[in-house]
Amino acid sequence: MQPPPQEHSESELLQIRRDKLDGLRQRGIDPFGGKFDVTHDPGALRENFTEGVAVKVGGRVLAKRTMGKSVFFDVGDFTGRIQCYASKKDVGDDAFDMLGSLVDIGDWLGVEGDTFVTRMGEKSIHARTLTFLSKGLRPLPDKWHGITDREQIYRQRYLDLISNDASRAVFITRARMIAEIRGYLQARGFMEVETPMMQDVAGGAAARPFETFHNALDMPLYLRIAPELFLKRLLVGGFTRIFELNRNFRNEGISRRHNPEFTMLEAYWAFADFEKMADLVEGMICHLADTYCGGLKLEHKNDAGEVTKTINLARPWRRETYKNLLKGVDEKWWDYTPAQRKVRAAELGVEIGANFEDYEVTQHVFEKLVEEKQMDPLYVTHCPKELVPLAKQNVDDSSVVDVYELVINGQEISPGYSELNDPIVQRARLEEQAGEEVQKIDEDFITALEYGMPPAGGIGIGIDRLIMMLTGAESIRDVVLFPQLKRK
Image (cartoon, rainbow, N blue to C red):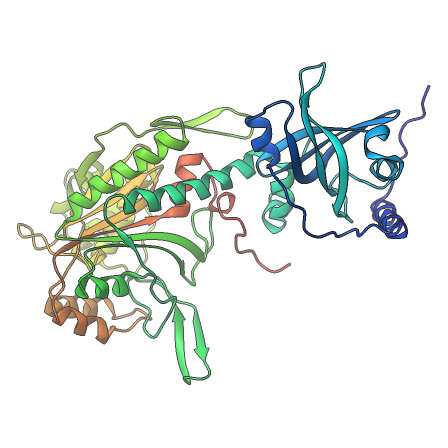
């Protein structure tokens, strides 16, 4: 009977790996090798397998089983893994001894050989040559449990990606969805553009910016809170269908729905309006769900695999006015005075600040009692003009603007406007908004509008929130590779 495997402390495990590092160098092997010309990725080779093909594959060693004069080991990367077989006769005494005694789980190897299928039916590579590529000086997380501490997952995402197949799949899906969004818009005549991330005036949204300073210009600058004002300058310049997939920065709170650095899609379509933009967004999100989520019925599951909520993206998506939705909360809401609305909000259990304006009271009631309870897609249209100073006023009701707010999964996914292109009205709106805001009016933007901006529809989509909704992630930190965390 064999004795149980010896347990080692963390410091002993680290020293064992350092000793193996020295052992590689003593044999004249570079522990941190260089170029290796791969012909296939491990997962792709396994997925599209043909027997009897000469291949060169590089990957991290994920499993190893020694059986006398032969070793079976798995190598893998983000594409997947494949089994390899090495015998002393084929790879030689030195390479076989290196594989057996100096290669640990987590090291990177290059394998050159031929594809074959084992007697057990396993797709494999029969190794002829082994090339050491990189030594892992720390052991990987437990292969069965991976990393379970949420903070460690976010601080050491690289370990999460190594050990957690589901997490890795989310980020692969995210990358493919973003590429698909680009293709979807470009196929419809939209041109991708880039606008400044450092701006003299932080505009395009009501948010607190991050401040910086440019030494050569001797002037303060702000990380952008939105690209909107620059994209509209491009409409003035004659670009009629444009979009930007950008990084925005807002110096505000952190929560499961907010990260100070986030990804946003903004697109503008000359001669369109908010309803045409809603059609564009609806088609694009349904296309993403069909392509990457297996259809329009999305099931969100917990860690135990139990369905916690279901979102139905079946078209057409419901569209309802802001005012009617508030009537659904209280039929008399719009008949109350501002003072009565504050009282009613408290009765409904919605916390209201003492200095809230009337429209802010209504918006808080909307967020708590309408938005957060809405799972399936809902276009909330014709919102109060105070909420959206950059949108065109409705011709039939001067108290609202021609906008939508798309709500799915209890949160706003996308706003869309019929864009305000009247420079006189725009200045007045921004002056009204700027009262207690950190931002100031962007005079060059007003000047640009005075040269004439065509009527247009515009949209914004929070990419991180969209990915959360489509993949079932419950926190924005689960769809952002390196979320912002407080320093340890």
